[in-house]
Length: 436
Image (tube, one colour):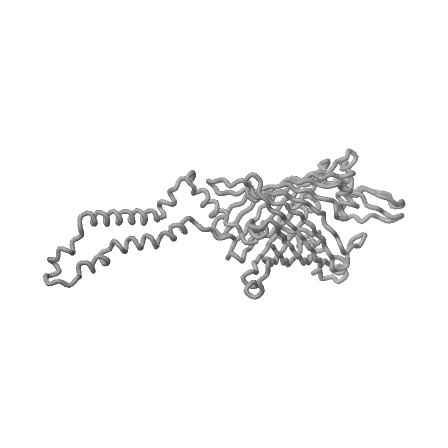
């Protein structure tokens, strides 16, 4: 299944000033009852003597003291509503909660995908349509060979529960891809299931009170349900540990993510079945192993990945609470099994080659515009779930050029330029996401 970066979009925060806004009518009432206007009718009662000499207009001493005390209380309440007092509140006395709400101004798409914490059961469904750059090749013969248009579905049911004061989420992920163009693979399959997985994650392990950085993390296990894992990698499964740190700076939301995955494979080498006399198609010549062309059977066509590290950085700018622009870049370092008789240096070895490392580095990048559709849809149809739509460009390619003499930077141009369009490194996509 073709992958793309995670979409992110922002939650408005509410400061402690709301509590003072609720007390404002009380302050106004006190100040009104102690004002000169309210006392004037007592002195304005008609009498035969001049009003200026009316002794009834003079309040008793005890009443005057009570009024002065009420005015002092009202003044203290008004002063307490000042912003200086709130800003000066020590962290230990509760301002950390207000800071956490403000700095974690989470984008709407992230908030929705994390789920409504008031509901135990949830579901995220993503319908994706993507088109590879090979679809736009000028040569009709190449275009018919390398064109790619596909549809994929991503289903993520979830269950939230409380554990020792933490709101944990258990989630399953199921997905598949349906290619709409003529498949360019052997065997030619239109339907390709992805590896299924189970998550257990905490979206707020800890919020650092001074900086306001929120830390998340979890564990994920992959099950071999894809053709690649079952037939080629012969993988039993994979275990992944992941985490992230995020913070908002006004409308800008930043997320740094990291992860480690250990694959459990039956063999060191990836296997394919080759019919009698057939040559193996080599999509990555640097990883392929030589095999006889005149005999049938399973042959290794490269080494399986033993474990990998991933690091990513995503930035989201929120124009409104519904509309956001995101860019993400990720580096994935995969460490493969090694074998002594492979990657031997000889006269045919490139001077730029990395030998005996059994490693491949991949860059992934995404540019995405997301819009939350609830404000448009729900006034017309009161759906029991939320809808989001996004359009974007994603790219997944080696970190270095084929000759290992340069870096393919994650700025999309190198993924498409210099005769790389046929590789379909880059894809244009449209997503529709439903969140319950």
